[in-house]
Image 1: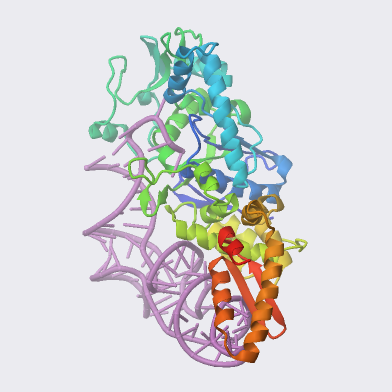
Image 2 (image 1 turned 180 degrees about the vertical axis):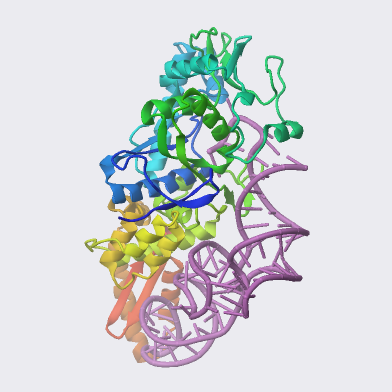
Length: 473
RNA sequence: GGCGGGUUGGCGGAGAGGUUACGCAGCGGAUUGCAAAUCCGUGAAGACCGGUUCGAUUCCGGUACCCGCCUCCA
């Protein structure tokens, strides 16, 4: 059996992955807060964990892996949108309206992640479907002395959990000294965090022992992972920015509510994504969603390739140059493997992936398989690349041409004939200027020109320019 | 201030204490009317300063610079 090694944030080192139960592997990924389209940074953990899940499927069997990724559908921005709609006259309670709003964004999320070739998780729980479980967990925390109710709020008593700060390497005292914590009159200690907070009439709320209110951030993941995966599960993943406070607080809640479990055994954190060397932010103008890229005709497969070309524990820089190189590579591979039946994945690819998800190393192996297209195809497909239903982008440019009322196939045939005639004439006259002009124009239009003694071949490239090609007819 | 990540050849980006990463680009050759594609060959690296070692880009310590988190942002 393939030995999988993973870097565990909790122990700060790479370790051999030992399932708690090889018959039932359990993995939880912190999913999106569904207030809007997913940005590119949201896609990184999804693609990384998709790669891990595919590997686990291969090693242990797909039916022995349970993959959970939640939707957090309680959030101030969602609430604001719901309230706005209600005030605009849309019928229904605020709870109904946030449900409608998040149903929209969840559908977008699915479409976008599907485009990246990410497998759907086995469970995609929505926070608002687990309010009773959250309330029950909060009650048990109060009973155990780990939480207290005050003024309609319920807070987690950080000092009651000696391990608090261990995951992120912080101490409670240091953090208070850092003085960036919210001080509120209802807190016993500045580091205590909210489990439940009251809602007024303009906020969605659910009945609870502490009055009508809504859950704080963090508790939803503890409640849902427990409900679906139990006291202990194998892997918990997410972006490194969630390490503190989100994951630290999850650990505190879950371990105090279920002291006999170990919660998550391995914590996987991916590093952040940057754009052209800078943090992606709206103020810098380099913020974009996955959908923005797809609409700019950057294929989902290309996005996936770029995301996998940097190791997940390193900062990843998205550049348009990388996207273009990736597109060229995938184009070549798709041409090379056209009509080929996949054989079996190269063991070196699996070995690289098993070594702490070395996706960049695995891609390097793919490059070495040019002479064995069947194995290249199988290996790439193992990584969620070169799959049949992700290849539509190769026809995007052809589609554009069809809009210009001719088919690319006919156009290239007729231009091949034209170029052949021109060359034959030039061979006789020794004046090649006409041939060169057409050849240059074709190249500029994104067509690969192959001339040999046996004939001329024109091949559409990844960046075929429809209008330019049409002008040559 | 606290915590964490990064720094590899022109660019991107891995592994390994000593033997070619790899890709793109470049250069030389074959081929071509000239190119392209293809094939063959090839130069080029590990921020800085110390330490351990027979030997470090790889381990340890420090410095510099960049980035992130500590603000419901993956």
